[in-house]
Figure 1 (tube, rainbow, N blue to C red):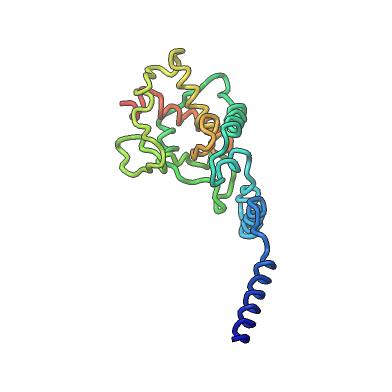
Figure 2: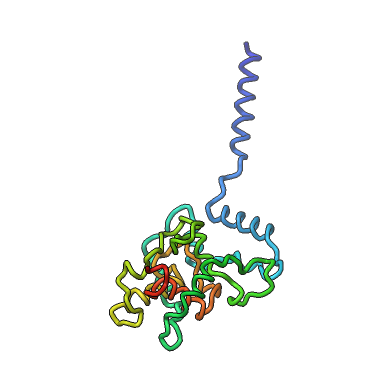
Length: 216
């Protein structure tokens, strides 16, 4: 019996010693640091895709947490994004909707197998997330339908001052979507140099020009 008590006491002592020597749980900051070290170790420069792409700005870091950003941080992200928008040269917002449709269908650009970072080589990839023209039967549903985008918003002539607010909003949303929603999943086409001014004008035309099939 004494032997059993002794063994039990020794077992408890070993267990307590093990518990006492267990390392403390890592903090959130330490886990983030470990995760970033793993990410950096897993990526490399290849072609036009460079490791600096994994560096997060405020909007990306605030919205990649398991918790949404605070209202204060969200407002800061939106304010910085709004300030970053480059409005069109000469106030020319609208281009050619035909070119815009080609861009919306285009899915290439910015991969390591591409040979240039020039936005002219990129597509808009709009159909990856949106329904746009009813004739297109293959589209994503991550984003809302853009069918009749301008028509539903009463845009009869994009140059009409009465349409200025929606025209400017649409340009801003395409240029840097985080200006209107801090954690928007929409690509920041202008801000990230995915598309140039001319290309954004053409997508604007696809969405807003009354002659575009989108608004028929």
